[in-house]
Every structure is written in structure tokens, then in C-alpha cells.
Amino acid sequence: MIKEKPNLITNELINLLRQLDNDTFLHGMRVGEMLYKFSRYLNLSLHQSNQLQLIGYIHDIGKLYIPKSIISKRGPLTDQEWNIMKIHAFIGFNLLKDILNQKEILNAVRYHHENIDGTGYEGLIGEQVDFYSRLVRIVDSFDALTNDRCYQNKCSIERALKKIQKLSGAVYDKELVNEFTKFIFKNHLLC
Image 1 (tube, helix red, strand yellow):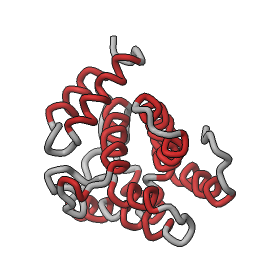
Image 2 (cartoon, helix red, strand yellow; image 1 turned 45 degrees about the horizontal axis):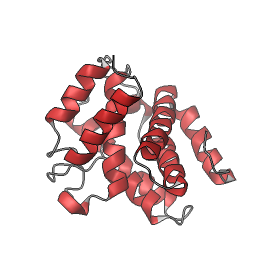
Image 3 (cartoon, helix red, strand yellow; image 1 turned 90 degrees about the vertical axis):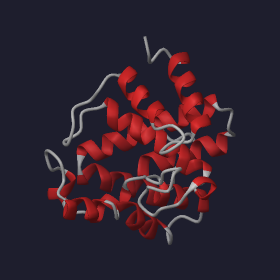
Image 4 (spheres, one colour; image 1 turned 135 degrees about the horizontal axis):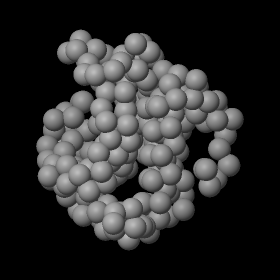
């Protein structure tokens, strides 16, 4: 639940995602809720937490323009399908830029698949990847790993954390991964 009252356009976007694909919609809801909780754990302001929650809800909005056959494909994507899927972040940015006037939200939607080492969708490296995008990158991956997706079976929380920790400093921000691990332990998500 968004803690600040969302505008009508935001609700419409979320509803469009629900209609697109239930798995994508549920993923976004989980990412939004976890981003909110993680940001509160990090002692970010309520405004920042609300922004991050909204980002989680709509970070995959660009998938509205990706063929449903690719979105819901069982098993691995072909190289051509993968190249189409990878543009969803840029499409989402373009879709939202005339609707939302919040640079932090727009950047996180566009750059949530950027890696610290420059191997992400657009090749940003290090500090070029903004703070919100770094947060979303971790939480988005964690949720994708710990929930069944049409292209993969879920893994345990422990295994997901190990995968993320292994890529810490390359794909993910090392300090944020350390904080995220503590957050998971503190919230008893890991037994």
C-alpha cells in the first residue's frame, strides 16, 4: 500500500500491469513493499520510502509494450527475445517521463537493470548508477530469485542471498548488499 495518496494516473498504471500479466503485477507489488520496508530499515525519509515503494510497483511498466508471448514464455528467451525484453526499462522511462515529474523515480525505472561493473542494459558504471537504482537492482533480483517465475523455479532465501552476495561489488552495490543481508536477518526472513 502506498503510504502517500497515489494519483489517479499511478493507479491506472498499476492496473494496466495487473491486466498485462499477473506474475509481473505481483512481482511489482512485492518489490514495492520490500523497497518500502528496506528503505525504512535504512532510515531514509518517509518521502524517499514512498518514492521507492512506487518505483517497485511500476519499475516494469515498460513491459506493457513487450509482446505477451515473451513476457510469459516458459523457459529461456532466445537472443532476439532477450534483446526485446531488455528495452522494457527504457520504454518504461519514456512512458512515464511526461506523466511523472520526479527524476529519482524516472531514473530508477530506466536504470534498475544497471550493474556496478558496467555490464547492465545501458552500460552505466559505478557512481553513474544512482542510489535508488542500486536499491531496486538488489530487491528486484531477490524477489525474482525467491518466487517462481515462468522462466525459473524459485530458490530459498539463503540461496538467493548467496547468489546476490557472490555478485556484490560487480552487479550489486557491496555496502547495500551487506545492509540488505542484515535487513533480511533482522526481519526473520532467514531462519
